[in-house]
Image 1 (cartoon, rainbow, N blue to C red):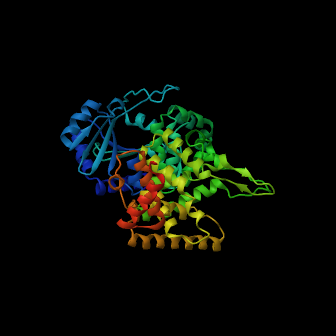
Image 2: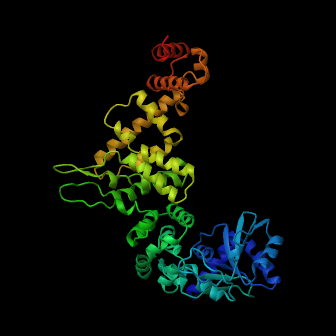
Image 3: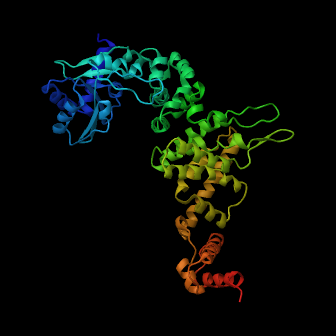
Length: 480
């Protein structure tokens, strides 16, 4: 009977040969040059799990300059951005490889970056990695490929548990970003996190502050775009890590007393995120903007919470406050301007539907809804639907029906009008020509007036538009 390690080796080799057979040709080139080459870390783990992608990580005893020479003749293209850390990368066909010299790092407790020292053995290299399931290697340059598992990573894979290869305090002390990686792996793999790792994260959480915002940003995106972001976010909140990364999230755990009941905003937020993910097919698949908007849509509630005399709670204008807070948090996390703009807009608009939900939507209201959403209308549809987490089935059905009606109204108006690009019947040049005036602030005021008419009444036609403009000019133009 085969041992778990033998089965793991067989699975890894089979997957590697099926998904990335060119790895063997790379190994042959390193072997001919007198060097070792091993598939290492996440790709080995993913190969065993049958989910190997096109990004492969290798480790070698060759120094970066030697790796560069070999890759130059093997790859279609190479780059050296990680050379200072011993990594040379290349691409051949649709496969990207990163090859890193064995490392043995020393960390300054106050530094964001390790001092890189090259190591002499793959065992030393593996011992410095973050979790046992990532301390796996498949040596490809030995006569028969050797599977290396120094810390029982295969057993932890089978148990679906995330465990440190050594003392987790040392692990997170050396590189605090590994705490974010723990949360990310929990979400991506849907693994349980070992209690010793969780307790260490609680002790070490504040140390994440020495890590650059850019590195935290990258890990947070990977977590949010994972299969089950709730797991990682919950771990971050429970260990205190979220307090230093995205403090608005744990603050959603608002106290509830017997007189002032309200929905559990924190739990509601995680449910909205899950429901938005379930609707992502409408957006073409996994979508970072909708996931961020779902996560942040209610972050303005703690600042706007007011207790109503006699019982109850209000959160007036939390969408306005939340939109501003979302901008600030996403800027601090180094998100790009377009993502910041789109997420903050969705947070600002997420209650807009409820202003009309109790009554009939006029054509004017529909136009303004579409106009305000601009290019994010489908995102707003998803967020608004996901934001319904009531357990009252009759209420949920009524809200869904009302929103169905709104979407149908939008589609009907789209057939009649150009709703996706609502503009006045006359543009700025036409306004200047009709009124006989040069470019000035008055042209802008006239344009806004005509836009309001367009939103209120739909397309006016040339004659009526001109008549309405002249009527406005008679009242608002310079007095003779």
